[in-house]
Structure formats: C-alpha cells, structure tokens
Length: 357
Image (cartoon, rainbow, N blue to C red; front, top):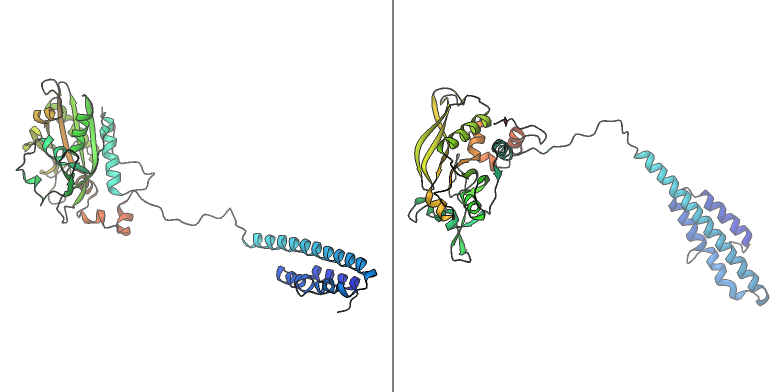
C-alpha cells in the first residue's frame, strides 16, 4: 500500500460505507486500525520521518485515525439499527390472532368438596378452625374421653411419632380433626360454632381407605342446645350438600366416647343403582352426638351451664357419593387423566345450594 495518506483515508472511508454487515465493518476496522493495520504501521514509522516533518506527519495521521474511527462508529450504529428493524419485522406478531391454547389447572374434587361443605355450614353461622397435623395423645385421645385400652390407641391403627412433647406426652399424627375442637374449647369461652376440615392419618390402606385422608368435624357449644338442634343442622346440611330437597335422613343410636347420646346418621339410597334419595335402603354417612360432659370438663367448660353437639364425616366419602366415584385410590395417584375428568374449573360455581335459614 502506498504512503499516500489522503488516498488511504478516502479508500478506507469508501470501504466503511460499503460494509454490508457488522462482520464486514469489523474486518475494515482491523485492516486499518488493528494491531497490524495499515494506519497503525504508518504511525509506528514516524521514527523514520525527518525531524522537521515528524510533527506535521503525526498530526495528519491522528486526524486520519479520528476520522476513520468516527466513520466506523457511525456505520456500526447504522448497521445495528438496520439489524434491529429487520429483527422486529421478522418477529412481528399479529395481535388480532387468537391466543395459543394453554393447559388450565383444575380444582381437585377434594378441594371443591371442602369449599362446598364450608359454604353450607358458613351459611349456618359456623366458622373454620384449624390445628396442626401432629398432636399429643391427650388432645387426640385423652381429652376426648377415649380410655387407655381403646383400640384406636393401638399402634396398628395410629401413627405414633418418636420423642415426646415438652410436658412428656406422646406425639401422634392426628387420627381425626377432633383435637381442633379441644383446642377451640380450651382457647376461649363459649359460645362456639366451628367446623374443622383437614387431613387425618390412620394405618389403613385399600380401595376405600387411605393412610392419609380428610375429615370435617363440627362443634356447637351454647346454652340450651338440644338434640333437635343437631338433627336440624345435619338434615339441612345433607339436603343442601347433595342437592336433594327431600333426602331421607335417619338417626340411629350409637356409641362414641366423646358424645352422649351418640348417633349414626344414614341417608336414603338405592343399593342396586347407587342413586341417593330413593330405593328404600339406608347408607351410613356420618357420626354425631351431644358433647360428653367429661369432654366439656376436660376443656374447662361448666357442663351444667353449657351444652353442645358435635359431628364428623369423611370428606372423601361424601365426595365419592356425590360424584359417583367408587375407588378412593385415584384421589392420590396424581393421574392427570383422572384429574382432568373429575376436576373443576376455578371459575365454576359450586353446585351446593347454601340458602339455609
């Protein structure tokens, strides 16, 4: 290349202007201003120039370098803008097109059943109470008047945990949500009107039993509460929950350590078809009764002034009856096909009628 600086500058500027992309522009920059570039070589050769010409030659080389650098940066900005415009054009989206279909999550049948139960009892004035899954054996058994020799206390039915509580009691995974009732009664004075939905644990597993399942229990404590209040509450609940206005409901004498008198509650159904509300057969659905005076005393409540009723039911059981399901295990198998077939959309209105006086 000649040492004609003006020609070199003009030639390089032309090449900069002709660069069609950033790679070509960078090649021009390296050829002119790189470590081994032509202009760099000219600047390194200043030592061989006569002293009287060195100053002017150096000023001319610096001016050429500045001009080329500015031209390169200007061309780089122009190429970047052009590349951005090209990319935006390629990625243009037609906002009038319908959106891509997306998979929607569904509400599990257990969660929806809990919502419906809470809605019905909420209309009756019940509030939701909660408690821990790990309890001590006094709240789970002793405070509920369940004696030491009761089969439910055996480890073939109850999950006992290692270690003890600070006051020396054994720890268990709660076998029912009744400990929430004990916590509620010991946590504040009556009147009380609560339901306690939640997970419970028992050592059992087959098509109709799971080692982890869900229960909801109810408790009402007030002055002058009678068995009639219990019966009216449960009849209204069952008819509202199952959506059958004249659902037959039957109360049978039974025994539970924590209620006296105690009653099993049956609903009418057809044994052959499984249809609820008809057929002349009876199906046990839940347990209930008046709170035992010993339970009230264990919780520091004067049983001569306050009375109450309690009830409990398996959430899976009532869900299976309401939706015609015959096997408990798919509730926990996480089979996406089953979940899609039985789940509910979040925006769906619960099918339970809650207009209870």
